[in-house]
Image (cartoon, rainbow, N blue to C red; front, side, top):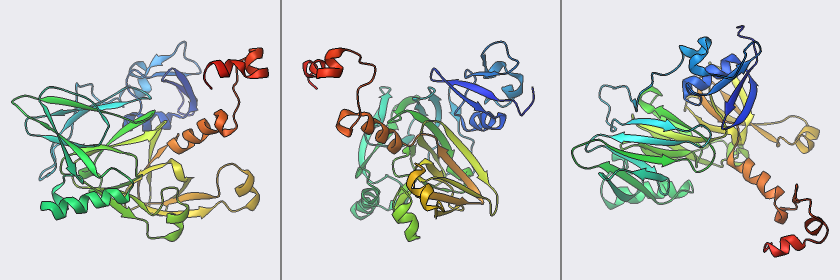
Amino acid sequence: MSGSAEWYMAVGGHQVGPVSEAEILANLRNGSVDAETLLFATGMANWTPVKDVPRFRDELRPAAPASAVPAVPGRRAHEIDFKIVGEDVQFVEVELDPGESVVAEAGVMMYMTAGIEMETVFGDASASQGSGIVGALLGAGKRLLTGESLFMTVFTARGGRKERVAFAAPYSGRIVPVDLARAGGELICQKDSFLCAAKGVSIGIAFQKRIGVGLFGGEGFIMQRLQGDGLVFVHAGGMLTSMDLGPGETLRVDTGCLVALQPSVGYDIQFVGKIKTALFGGEGIFFASLTGPGKVWLQSLPFSRLADRIYKAAPQGGGQSRGEGSILNTAFGLGRMVDGE
């Protein structure tokens, strides 16, 4: 089948598309699409799982109970295995050998086996924040600046066998694993996109030096900086895609759709260019301008956009009930009064 064919995907019970072959390949490589995702294109008789479509079969990751992180000589962070479960509302299950630990945001734990021990700590519990009360306060202060909780939770496998702990994304979207050892040792991400990481990864802050980015970039002057050589998990809303930008290559995106980027990528804010477009185009006044080299991760549904639509549809925000055709509801509102609204 031609590479120019338009494809459709079935994700979470919904049809997504048309999408290009390149987009499907990118989603396969970053884990957003798996072997069971259904595909359809002109010329096919039925919706078919990715594993049964010859064009994409070779791109599938080997099936395994858990994905082992490739060994990196001299890695200081804990080596952890994992698997990501689900389609559009995902969670990640981390498998820990005895003595291994994973660090997570407070309140994201989904389940854990009996041999997991929890400990709440100031900051991120990484060795880079120093020892003693001063180091702990410094790490906690950094997290306070990003708007996150002062505390993080460390989950450690105690006993003589492998243990499992799972972390759930806070809203519908995708989880992407990033091995910092193979991504240059550092990642800049949105303040609320970090989910969990192998112990040894430092979760700090990244100040935006350009005032335009700070004022109009959607994420303010402060973003999260993940540093180290371990595995981190980042959450994005809706569908997730990654792009590799070449030297000098520029990509303009909605400021809320940016999830993460390598520090080598230049990040600036660009005016849309025309007053009429800015005021009436519905796309905002500024774009994020990303310039390579480096890799960026983008999300299709920022939580702020979803929350704004829900608020506008709610009666408190001026929205109206739809599909409730009762005369009592539409004419007199008596039905809503009975319901306590």
